[in-house]
Amino acid sequence: MGCDFTKLAVPGIRGLNPYLPGKPVEELAREQGLDASSIVKLASNENPLGAAQSSREAIAAMMDELARYPDSSLYNLRDSLCRKLAVDPDQITFGNGSNDVLVLLAQCYLKEGCSAVFSEYAFAVYPIAVQATGAESIVVPAKNWGHDLEAMAEAVRSDTRIVFLANPNNPTGTRFSETELRVFLGNVSEEVIVVLDEAYFEYVLESEYPDGIALLKEYPNLVVIRTFSKAYGLAGGRIGYSASSGEIASIVNRLRQPFNVNNLVGAAAVAVLNDEEYLNRSRQVNQDGMAQIEAGLKSMNIDYIPSSGNFITFDAGMEGVECYQRLLKQGVIVRPLTNYGMPGHLRVSIGLEEENRRFLEALAAVKPF
Ligand code: PMP
Image 1 (cartoon, helix red, strand yellow):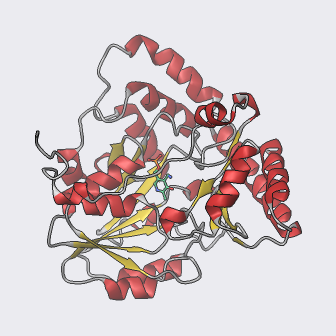
Image 2: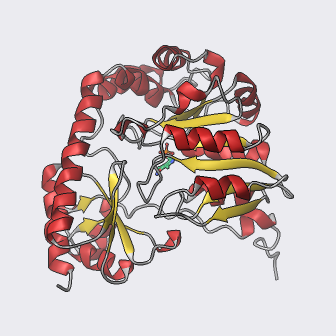
Image 3: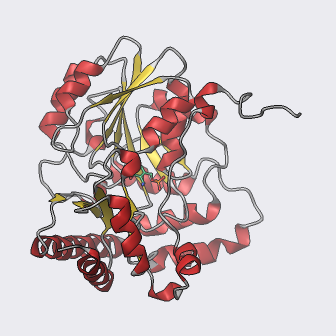
């Protein structure tokens, strides 16, 4: 017989449970014999407006460059971003989605014999990124579905190199305040890198919500993660970044693939970054859609976890997977949360008014009231 190539894989990788993405529209259309245009996909926290006209035009204008390698430093985008965020160019690290930067950080700072701390119900990429390095994951029980920052600070050990915080968290939508974050940072050794994942930053309305980038000067061990996948509408283009000290960025850049961000999305990101109108519309659609879905859930007496993101997690009132399957039959795709240890919940992304209405109607039809 041939080799056992599973056994030959490094142990951290062999034991991985891969990330489960939302079901694609085309797959459901095939499975259920539905017309793809009738399907509502609210499963991956995408921007329901579609990509901005400004980013579409920037991509079209970039087509002549498709045969060329991209600018590895993303000079134009770095320049625009640094002005906007008031950071220095050497503080930014771009990734093929912020997911890429999360994995790079883990690879740079973790190995067997080290540990990383994150919360129960935290974003599913953290355990994958940690385990792939052979390091140990320390999962701290959540408090009211959110991060228990006090317990997380206590969970840090002498071998802990990274703490992952998601603010707001996906899939629970929970968030913490600037005061809570500052207390946490004060309680954690400066030698521990605190990765503050702000993928949904642009959607948060609450005034006490911290801007991680404004805290970088005070906390050299802080790394802030942002993305163009959500409010900026470029999830399919794949671009995200971290802002950190120049020293940490210089380490991550040693491992980063030189062309990990393609030139099309690089140009699109510059355009949409300066497109205030699109960002405002994204926020408004989210705010209105969140109110619509909350009102619909309330009217059906369905419990939900109040969310600061562009999605909301609710009590399915039955096995989440069962409710998910029933919704699929109605042509509505949401996200089951069994792999997050939340088998009775489902997460729905905020869509356009009509999509939200379709979701609420489908939910009313499948619920045993
Ligand atoms: N962090 C969080 C909390 C997320 O929810 C997501 C997307 N699901 C990401 C990071 C990664 O997003 P992307 O790779 O598209 O930037």
